[in-house]
Length: 305
Image (cartoon, rainbow, N blue to C red):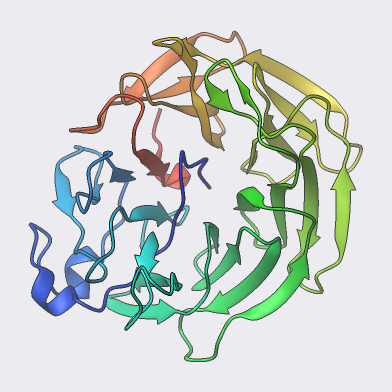
């Protein structure tokens, strides 16, 4: 459940040969990770536990550039976004999602730009730039199943902790406010994972990202200036905080815990917690992140403060 600065999804065709400090064996990544990081340099993605010591992820495919790791809530599943499909090149531009989970790896043929894990079930929800939403079971070899189609590009996507609904921000037109992309006129929708039924959530402002609260009763919704807490059933805003601003840019929504909203501040690479008083507290600072580049995914169930 993470607001990426760019894209996301992975392919581990070269796990056996790519090396890195994590090794070539998928079992080397079978831990409860705290963060997944793309520091802004090609092929430098890594995962880390609470001590933030980086364990480099393998280059997911020959010719791929920057792969973005997306973690499950418990940190035990990784999905790399931004990989060429097996056998594909930049000429045909075909992407895949590759996942590392329970000591195994699998390529999922779907051009996802955003993903979110469905609890610890091994299923993953995939969204693309055409508004397609699909579900894949990474424990099976079957292709992804279409769940729904929404209007416009999907900018952000998050599955609730119980695995019942997926919330997403989609559509709108390109728009930059305060040096940050905020799609003008974008919509927030909630889709039932059981049957694909879609309902819209009327949210003020120009939403750009969403994240579910731990109990699934509300959503954090990001707009250019604030993070809003929105009730799932009534769509009423129950609380709001000003987005922290560092280096002239607001921090990005990275999730919610029982202790507050998580933000990822690209100017200095910090992950912060924002409580009701609106004052950010530094939670962690992953290594090697270039200012205004890369992305961070946080396993929200592993946040201890």
